[in-house]
Length: 510
Ligand code: MZP
Image (cartoon, rainbow, N blue to C red; front, side, top):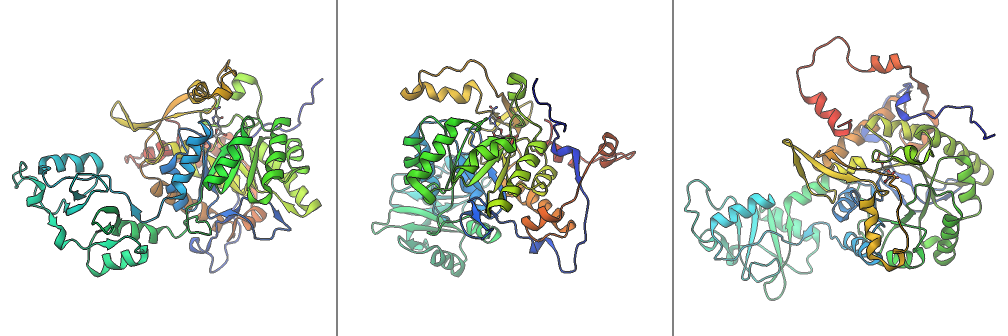
């Protein structure tokens, strides 16, 4: 007969944190959210880590270039999906690594002959209010002038007039020269009270633009996750089929961390992969394994390898139907608690600390906090990021509400890329483990992320913790009854604002 575990499979929503003493002087501004990703010996604080304990899922509908840049700017890390050919994944990594914060390629341009009506149309389409005027209308053409939405009045001026009659001509444009540092560029913007500084080469050709708003944005995001060369950090997913080709290409492109993307990582295939990667690249690679849901899985992958971090979760993802399709998985809270308990024992036995990532199934900010309290060093999320402006899918209007497509990596749609790869052509998919869905659009990542982080910090202060490790040690959790869940909501009052509904929609059941 099979072994029946005595404990029921639990989810995060079944737990609440009991507040503990908040000491004088403690506050959200003092909370440190940095967390490790590389294994640590005797809890030394060296090795690769991230500035906030949140990473984005290895998924086509989530971790593209734009999201990776935006998340790294907030202190987190994206894992660029591996369900694509090696070269295109490596190109995406390269793209993030070469993103020079502050210097952007101009993507709304005009020629001197473009009409004001055409420029207004361009501004509406792109949302940009500054348009460089170049000889050939390209983003790298010779600069002739600069036009902003302050240079004309849409409802007063003759819109058939050409841009050259309204623009600031080249002679009067304050610009920087190629090679100028970002600091110097910002000083020029400050000195001349400008919003935008074109950067030109020796032939007056446009190379990039520097905006005052980006400087302000940078000051507002001091947590940026940068490597030693001040480039943004990015992670990349790998699989157990082509790691011998994929890993060298990704490391060459500059990936800062890799992790296996597998719904079930408790396999010989993954162990062989970990061995091969660590044998060939040693500590030059920060490597995550999983997913697992048991202490047994942890022991198998960690005991005889140099694995850095471990991903936990099976079947809890918002688009996941693995539990229904195959009858495998475990409640996310139970899985996390089992692995964390084993991780902590392993640390006592060996002095080696393996960071644990709780992957999938988080449906609101509270659950992030509960996962961190239960011992996760970080969480991985898909849906949360799929809902933002920066996810790689197009905005779609359905019945007047804006949505974004979101699909699982176990869907036919995600797996289709393999048709184009010879190495994969023999493998057929017989059933799907994920669904193809839509999620509501919530706007720019920076905005939702700021709210999430302030909630996490605020709860940590309630527990009297200044850091994530202190939070884990101090946290006291209680299991809630169905009645106390009802009690947690509002009761016997009427709410006439739409805010609460919107908040639920951000994360909720839509
Ligand atoms: P969520 O944040 O949307 O709830 O879950 C994201 C996680 O679901 C991913 O990180 C991955 O572990 C898992 N996932 C991705 N695709 C599938 C699938 O098709 C899946 N079944 O379960």
